[in-house]
Length: 323
Image (tube, rainbow, N blue to C red):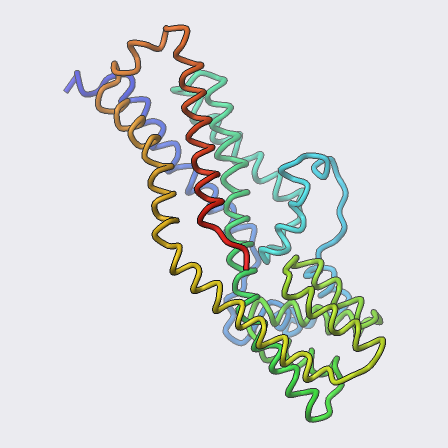
């Protein structure tokens, strides 16, 4: 038993306990930071705010991302954080988000410093306190944008039906906001509120395209902008655009199915060296420990890490296709 509970094993147990504890802290922080969206009588976040008596100006101030400025706009990883939070459907302010990340990092550092050197504990705190929340936000953003693209053809068909029966374009957009669920309902609701608040329709749609950053939405914005300036059968244009988007989605799904084996192989080949290194350290700490003092150890490990990362990037490039 004493042989099993070596210093390295205890350190790994501390790592695992710290990670699980901080994971619970970060999850709790995000749950506290998000607005409630579970009321069944509200189809989306905008409808919930309207149900609570909010006016158009208040709705836009909360749901429409503001052009914020601060020191984080000069940092590479945080430059797009305001847009990323908005695209993820999170209304938390950037300053509050960074404060909660700093609090989580300090908490992690406090726990990790008990068993780790200060430098390692600081890196652990920064990695789990800042990097993990950013990855969570990015995952939520990607999932929400994917769902928005999947809902877009149905929303365009609903708009086209409204235009064919004689409804104005802003009324058709309002019907999408009322009938469609989150996230497309909320985004079209913002457009409808902007128009009601006095913005020009092409400008409101273009802001929507810039806000979500999706190519399919840029096509919609261009179509509405051209029709607004020159006229034409917008219902037919929107119907064709809906068919094109559905075709692109079908093609993406086919490519995902065909390349699934390659993507799984890429993940396995990239993760295998890391798993082997971790398993070897746990089962036989002296395997690498006996050569750590060698001058070539750090250069060789850095080279292996760089080649592993390059392998991951190359394989990812090979099996990911843009449609």
